[in-house]
Length: 345
Image (cartoon, helix red, strand yellow):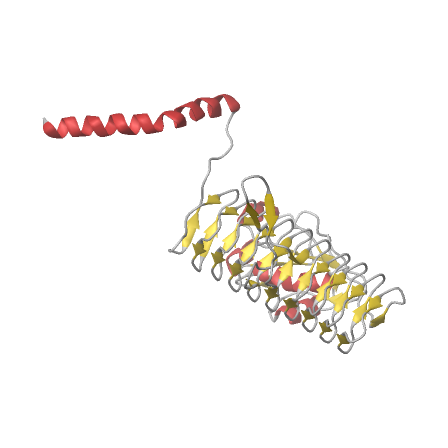
């Protein structure tokens, strides 16, 4: 349940969404809530048919929903073809994030001579900004964050507390970097001499496009030679690992714990479910969706939905199936021999 920090009315909500409504235009709205939890000063929303059962008994001031469900709504309705998008827009009106973007440089921050800071920049406590850094207008650098030498951060980008942007990184406009993420750490590059490992210097950088969000404790490694490149409007969840020289196309989304090995290319408008793993040096075309916990070891050249692995089952059943899996090769050979003998007959 969310609450507004300022007074809004039902008319304000409808105006923000550019939709019509019937009801008390002056009804105060203090926040958003689920259909079950909403009280008469909340707006609720219905974006998943699984919750249609809760609509008839909702106490919300109004419900944001698809027109096909309007006739079932017992309270004023706000109809949109994409109610989840409407919910996203309303959520920003009720965001309880504290006002942490007050312009200025905290006395404990360390800003190198020659760093260029745009207008309205907020640099908070214990931040370190190294030589050659360029911050655009209204950039917010949260407490304890570090921005490495010669990095560039675009206008209106926000770094939450304890973000690390390493040297030679470019971040576009309106980005959001959540706490603990590391942009531009060394890629995993080593050469083996038969007895031990020798580190390969990672000479490239990282380029993030505009409107990119990176979740907490995610890592995007710098390139070995060229850059690791993340396109515009890419959304990356928490605890995601993106290896050196990966490229991700515009408008793609990666859920938590995705791991992408080096030099793999992911297209535009792709969606990778939680825990998906992509092997290295693959090409994933535009418009691919990979369901959670899948392992992709070959390139994908046709748009669509892809899955691997099996769903959970009882351990007894799994043990039996695991034995059968080991027997598949022999079964396939026996079947092939049987088919050949039948054709000869």
